[in-house]
Amino acid sequence: MEETALKQLIRNAVLVSFAKTGRFYLPVAVSARHVHLSRSDFAALFGAGAAMKPYRVLSQPGQFASEQTVEIAGPKGSFGKVRVLGPERGSTQVEISVSDSFTLGIQPVIRMSGNTAGTPGCILKGPAGKVELKEGVIVAARHVHMSEEQAAAYGVGDGAVVSVKTPLPREGVIGGIVVRCGKGHDLEVHLDTDEANGNGILCGTILEALTGAEGGGLSGNAAGFGRILELVTERDVNNAAGRGEKTVCVAAKGFISPAAADRAKEKGIQICRLQK
Image (cartoon, rainbow, N blue to C red; front, top):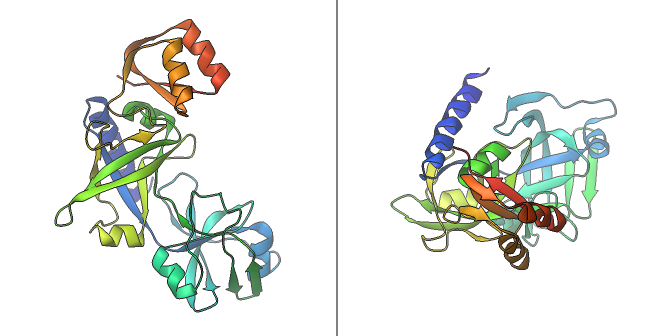
């Protein structure tokens, strides 16, 4: 195991242990502009038969920065040597900051990764050709990756919304951080360069995560760091569904009624058990 991966494994294990005792902290990675390419667009930019060459392993399982770079061009300006991330995707997506969008001369649209319908396009240039995208340029919405085990320890599920406290001298709160939970995710908040620079946050910074009682730190469909149920009933599930929530969280030794389990399955709601 590489040293960086080992440090991340140890760091996240410690943070999960803290979470199980009610102390919540989240590590941050700062995401610079980058490009995800489909197979056809990669071939158009780098030539038929070309393959991505891994340059550096990234923090999320199976993800890597490749040796290949492209130029992103918009109506007003361009950026050269923008890193291509792998592996290949089903459709091409360009991730930039709001500041980058001003330089390119395109409208900034904040979206979760993969939700590119109706977004602006751009021109990508590579050594073998260029690709004109009709859509696919986004400013990535702030989010936090978690495995299912990590999310259970934090008492949240996929689609939950959390907040973090930013450090001095620009102390404040960053909210609206959406939980992306499941296989292929590992504990880490992703902010773009604008958000990180504006709040004095460096890559690797560990921030305190706020509970629902601390300024509404958790909202939307979050199970909530401060909303762990000892008993989950059918009524709890119905109430969660009525609020548009996707997750109900139960304490490690809490009880889930059979009716609640059946209704959760019917409503497509995940019952997340906090680990000991």
